[in-house]
Length: 409
Image 1: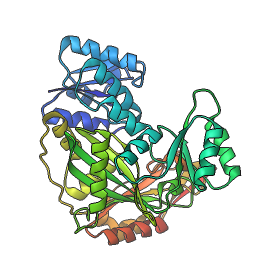
Image 2: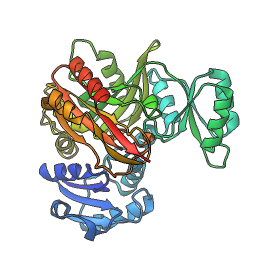
Image 3: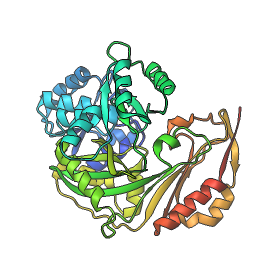
Image 4: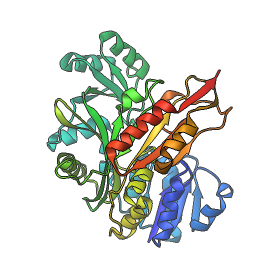
């Protein structure tokens, strides 16, 4: 089995996919933007071949690299695990005759309005939405649906670039900032869905879900990425198989996989549950970001990187989730922009919860702070586990109130 992986070095956990492919017996080639000389010793050992390209999002560059590789050895799979690379990989796959996620599936998982239209036709409950290529179209949708609304890039991941609007004035500001009135620009406009937000991750083989994991956001992502004072978290639950608790979510996820034609792949789906019931939000045809698989691994005594490689290469699962722990990550924001000056409460956290701590990242004093919207792992963070989900929520809340990240201008 010869697998080509796009961009093996960034982000840092990309090497886990390379390592896993090698461990299950694949011959691994990679295509990336850095030079071959810049590969570290482990990458040189794991990779049979490496092709440098100018831009891994450029279809022609990647296709040339793939054609060159094919002249020397057949390619069984071409894989990408980063959202920005998914469409390019699908186009090249089809042009080069390589099995895997189709361009149709990749497009529907990337373009929010097209995704929602396909899923509504399949009976999946979604927020009302549209694609808009002008301010006039945005205003027309607002007049029809009413506020609040979400305006975001058609191909954005999660809350990236998303803006909530509640008034005409905010809508006009969103239209201006999005550039939708410029030629060639387009946005997704959606009804705002009230409710609790979480995500549903799967590994599928030939359209069948063989592994599934459920996580919860506290608070919802849009709120978490807009307010400095919040220390947001998400928790991978160990109650996935509790009697009937997630049956509706699981059934919805399977309908999404079928409707979008997902075959053998990782998926990451976002959902809401509120006054209108369960609503699908969006899907990525790739593993979740923010290293959520690390939490699934700890909670389930698994190696999902290796299981992904096993399914990609051989189509047969080898591991089963234990559901032993709930596991979560708590993001800790500096109290201001500038440089980190120190921490308050860390020793107390270690004394209280040392046995529950998985790992942590506390940047050294003097490290420049990152903006709130940069995400859960941009500054300091702590990852925690516990056998009881409710107890873990208490622990995470207490750590958030106890551990403070101080900064100076």
